[in-house]
Image 1: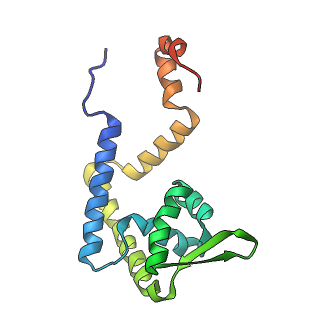
Image 2: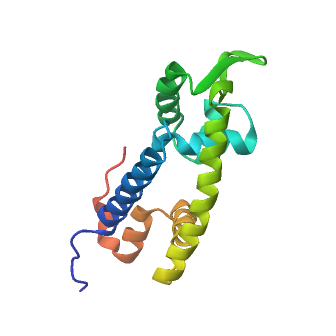
Length: 164
């Protein structure tokens, strides 16, 4: 029988994510970037694809539309992002980087390009392209869920599962 590890993988992954987030936020703060680090992905998405709806941003980044909208709201209020009605659907809003913050957004993109090299060096240092590995894990879990994997490895759990 496999020995139980503590903390489990999910907690370790969460802890690493929090460390990256905190250290990244500190870098941006020390460089005088006003935008909170948790909104950087939105800047990168708009930089890559142009002005988009929250649904399009959500699809591009791969996190929920509700989370995107909560992050956008404060930054629209602060003036970093602008919003306008979608000309094709008045119920939707299109988000862009406000003109007054385009220079800061360009600086953010430049810094993030440099972070790509930092991550490449980190992957070399640890001997694992962690980004590629996590992407592969996401695809594998999309194909076969943890529940299915558990029940396949330990069939006794199949009979214990409740339906939603």
